[in-house]
Image (cartoon, rainbow, N blue to C red; front, side, top):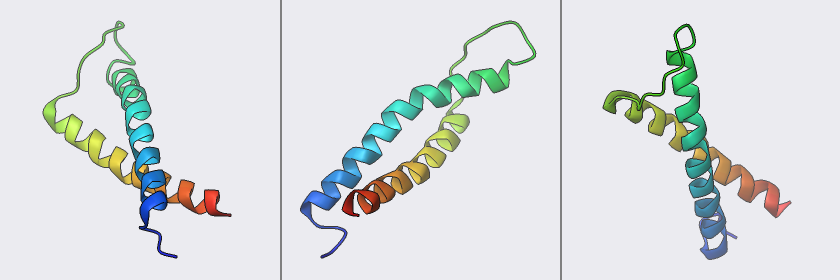
Length: 75
């Protein structure tokens, strides 16, 4: 059986998307905590460059999440 067949792809994609949506908000909070930890409470949207970094890292871990979900669901 191939990993990239119908139900398997669906499980990986759904897991990937759920991870992205949930962690987008978490990463936005972490970004602001790190950026303003020594200052008054402030909330700021990341710059375009920071968004690219955040999304790139999230995609790597979302793909890993999807593959691991498939793997452990199979066992």
